[in-house]
Image (tube, rainbow, N blue to C red):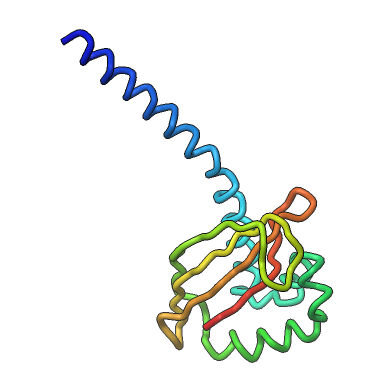
Length: 140
């Protein structure tokens, strides 16, 4: 009986240690999510120029500030204000097609706008100079 209790206690200790190790990666997710949501709040507030300035160097080299603002005005303005946004999933990867290797976080959100429900937003962030910065945004 004592041996069984010792094994259960050892299992519980292992489970607790494993849980701590598994949660060690959570700060990356939490940090990247906060950065992504802060950036989305700029887009939601129609601060398109500021969202461009806060994006990654790769993003800014791919599209001019004027092109970005025009694209968002065409894609986001007709949807109306954002009503709710729910995180659907997140993936972390070291590689993306057409991009240099790095640390990437890809968030998928299900978003409701005043004029349209069930919109999917995909936000890709890259670790750049110790900060998570948006490198791609897509809305479907």
